[in-house]
Length: 60
Length: 238
Image (cartoon, rainbow over all chains, first blue to last red; front, side, top):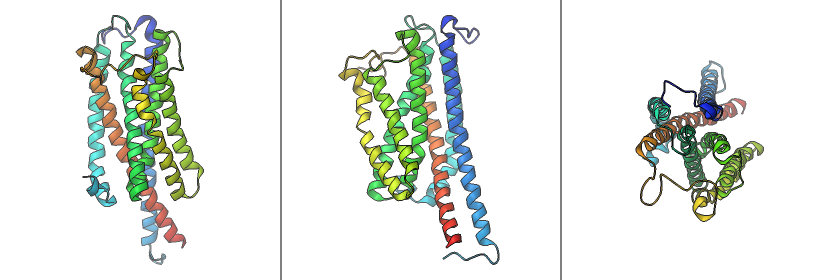
């Protein structure tokens, strides 16, 4: 079956859920990784800004 | 190269451009691989379900490859006590668990029409389930122990124990009589697949590999920042 006819007849019920699950898992991996990296990067920036503030406790 | 990247600053400089580059490569390969997958002819035995092979088999490869990376990073972390090796191991586990879950679920969706059952307790399927449980156990152990040094050591040992399962997964179809078909790509005498199936499979496998590379780097960067944040918070408190 070519790209012009994606019905896959009796197997569509297995093929499309597999594609959907794959898309969902890959999307979760990408989103979770990016959000996690952004969260900790912002946290570090905030803590460094706090430390650089006049009157803040100097680094040991 | 590994020695150069063991320096966190050098790693951060390297991963800053390497992760987006790998992501672009992954997106390109994924688009190409999906096009090849959906335009491939139907198999004379499997019919249209052969398309499931192009997302299932690369996920299974990645499940094993990620675990090999997890084991290698854990070994480096345990032997050299290197912070980046621990971060690499920690960052690898959720990605490996994701690929293993994908391999199991897409395998079930292929098994139902081809084998007539969603699940069989044969050697290959069971050993991949055990692999998934090792990933879950690794992450659970990390989360369960408050002291991060002890948690990293305990989960690292578990990761090394789990390496025993990798050859079992790979050779299970040769060692035991299983319902799962034997190797058709990495085998003596070369691949047994025709080019119209080998190409989409190969391109999708490379796409998954590039995606893993990009996400692994992003997650290691997150781990480096997390450690830095912990250290800054401790300094601020003390």
